[in-house]
Image (cartoon, rainbow, N blue to C red):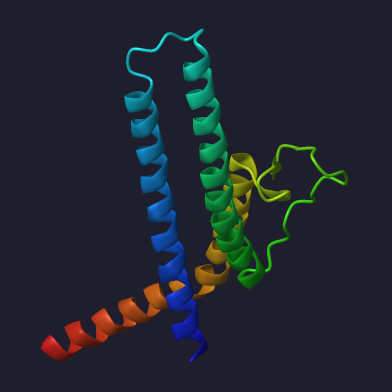
Length: 150
């Protein structure tokens, strides 16, 4: 029953990411509608822009939380070590980004791609022996079929 729960969790996380991406698009549309006719130096424009950045930072932090959880689960499954986080709060490095709305670190794009690459290498190392035996089995099966047809 564990794989069914994992599948449901994956579906829910994927749905949440889709909703967050739609929310980010709505925020951009709302900003463009709210700032029509306003000049960049006006106080109302600056207020709307600050509100947009605040809301967008919250949405991006929620998306980063989901993506970090997903890549962490995959890394644990394939026994790939996660990169080290910075020691001090508020600092970022090439693998981790600090997100103020949640006051937590989430994996950066570079860290995400590094982990995906490492996970793929582990996956490939696991499948290589099976694939070579599969090729041998297919060859033997085709030989048996050709002998039977003869």
